[in-house]
Length: 312
Image 1 (tube, rainbow, N blue to C red):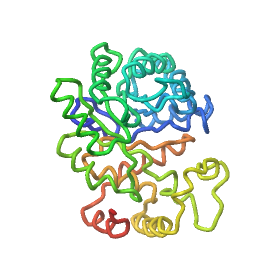
Image 2: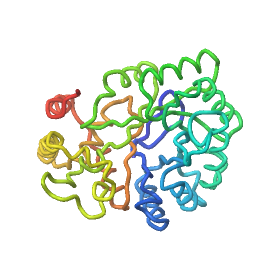
Image 3: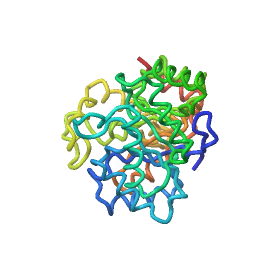
């Protein structure tokens, strides 16, 4: 498994990361442990979780599974979306951040996280307040690096320049929804991250399984799959996406690969991408995702892919 620096930082992460939003929801504690063991076997050592995944169970299960091997992983979690409707249960306020880091550390059974990320922008809190609180956590040793998720380019820019102006710890990464079927971040976010050396860590690289060939037009979703159990993801099952996936499958098969491997390889062809966060509910899915890391796409390959799945 190759490793890349996370943005401008010295932190090296496996180019394939493990997304864990299914832990505690579609994966019980025993399955979580098996998936994490398999990840370690193939050197997938970057784990991405959040305080809300699985209703907090994701962090709890990860903490138990990493007992005795915490130092083998780079562990990232998030705050900001929270749970409950009471005041300060979400957002980027100092109170929320300080409350949530303590809860996450307890659940993860660790005294620090490698990457702490604000899950979504909070228009109700000045970014300076958020960054000062995160900077304090870095100084306290509870957090090593900080990042953001679901930020627009202008929001990352505001955060980076606020950090520079006030001499605060700065975001080293941003997590956007990015894959072969969703390329809108290439208009502004990708150029910004390239210029200012902010690492891109795409989530949903397989578009909730559509880019694995798992789903077929006119056929019901496989029993137990994400599209079967979570209707919010079914919006991606449209005629245009099916047509594009079919063409991408043909491209991959001509080169003795799967469309899932193509999805991972295509993202990693962008040097601004530090790591690709791919979820897994079974150990064998980790192995399948890891195969895409070894495929190096040529310039001609990338041009042909652009014709099949063009940017909007």
